[in-house]
Length: 271
Image (cartoon, rainbow, N blue to C red):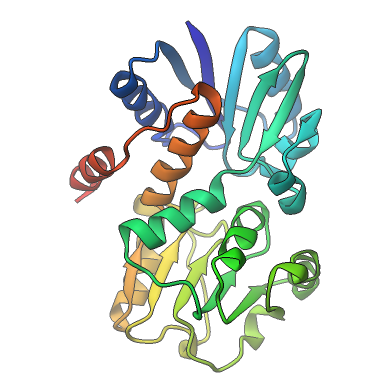
């Protein structure tokens, strides 16, 4: 039975094992999928032990997406552009890195939430590994403008320069977000993962716009509650998780699972 895993820290909360095993049953694919807790200072060691022990592929969650990219022997173009990976696969004698986060996010926004990205104004808060994986696919969807805001402005500028060829993207410090009407506000920081409040200027949370947290579950509740109180639509990243998992499964097994039923089931459980 082929072995797969999700590697992170923390990772016990991850729904990835349940999602992938559901996909496996749906498509008749006999796999094993588990969660692995890696030491914060030794992702490479944990990943190497997994693959040396017969692992075929791994998803990677916070805070290791940049570490995963560096660990792999080679990478897809989208992983190279992001400089971060949430997907690893054993190929021959080497490990290939990819990034399915952006595909998962765009699928959730467009197909599940009915968001029109073309011509929109997008604000991304955060400039870490989570943001890196979603910027290119969002820009490829044709927004009018994207702003990346980060506590450390220099990190935001690095990302803006990295993706400048993909579309109109600007970098600012967190306290200098321009006063304009954003259609989509994405929380790509680690605040929700760590149970912290994301502090944003009041003008960012515009009634009628969509607030989206790349995290999912109780951790995202603070940001989403704040957004809803301002009249915004709001969603956590559960749909993104399911959609990126489906893309990962396709890359590993050559079959793409249907996602609507399992996403509805997971939503009902968390209601």
